[in-house]
Image (tube, rainbow, N blue to C red):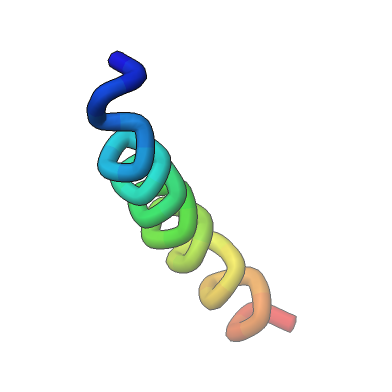
Length: 31
């Protein structure tokens, strides 16, 4: 778990960003 710390963090951050990007774009389009 600590050996792949950077990889895990990158994957989590990347997924979070990608997952939180669509909703934000949709909200901006509706507004």
